Figure 1 (cartoon, rainbow, N blue to C red):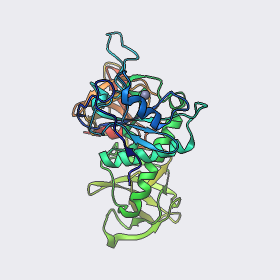
Figure 2 (cartoon, protein in one colour):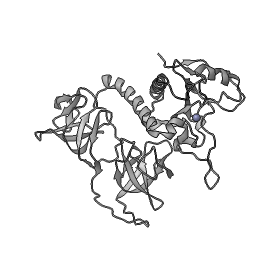
Figure 3 (cartoon, protein in one colour):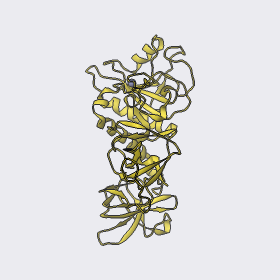
Figure 4 (cartoon, helix red, strand yellow):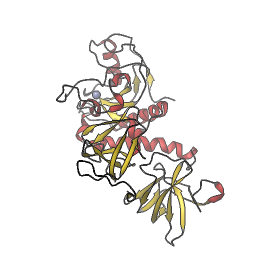
Length: 364
Ligand SMILES: [Zn+2]
């Protein structure tokens, strides 16, 4: 059963132009800035409003209504709030260039009379995003963005003034998604987009799920399974991260010093302590900035380009620029940073230090 009902407004030049989307790269969260008006109030309003504005889905504490088909354009995220010195409008999400309205779906959260979000509205919005992430094959952490992230509009205002609330929201959407997949998916599923194939990990490991298998040697074979660990249980020592087939495992030790192997996929395990990239083995060329290069990465996993940030925290960083898919850039290391399970590459961008999310670079 869907988390929202379809009740489309008529095609009209202002609020439902009837144009087709060019794809769904991101899901955009908004707030209505209209205290006391629910989802159906907004449907009625946009069915004959003469403003170039709208969104696909409106969520309140009792229902979610989709007012524009999810393969059509809504005018929700291509406004101009700021311009750079060259006169170009601020566009913070590279994947949504040149026009976010053709590449994303907009979801509006309605407000209570006092201007707050009702907890049922937030929960229903989480459920809507779970459904949309599944429908379009998107990742809650990477692919749900705020209107603010795209144009710097103060929307949704409570999650602009407090980014942590937005990060928490995405984490709950992710938890709801993996909560379902854990029961049916094999815990051997892993990612190949880890920041490094040669990273040494220090710290301890905990399982995020029940009955997570661990192995006697680097293997995904049933015959090598030694046992399972439940949620919250793990190993006191993580020795290193190793590539096993197309995915990664952590080599771990128990309190007696016995060695085992367990998936390194962050859906299933968390490692506390630092995960560092091992010391550079070759290049030590210096860039003209004096920042020491330890190698290069190739940009992967983005639709057009990766964003270079001024600090390793994608919720708080300013964007310094972008690097195109497939291009290479020198790195000076990698760091854990904040708000990204995959960490960040420390890159040398235009002679200065910058950061790119771990999943968007592959060491070459
Ligand atoms: Zn908005």
